[in-house]
Image (cartoon, rainbow, N blue to C red; front, side, top):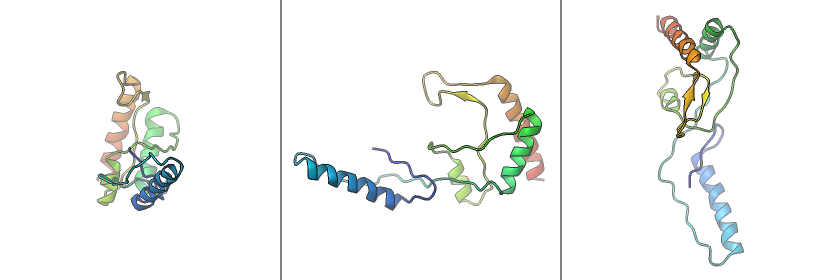
Length: 128
């Protein structure tokens, strides 16, 4: 099974949570047997809204799109966690669309142009 870790949780805590569930199942059904063994762990990613990179991306996104971007969270894992763990200022921003990793995956084409402008202007200022 896959158990994703979200900000505020630890791999050890998650493993203990799954172990408790399995122990309850085994207590209810003598034929049930399972073991917990972590084979791959990815740390969660969270960025504080006060971080300079967040403010800059929000500013550039508002300028490029004409609307204020929102904040959201996601249970999906992204390379942003690796970048942030390496000390690289990181924020996740992208185009609207749907169907990530599905047979039909799409983005709004107009959003791609906005994304291009946001990424370029952000990099030009942040890396200057």
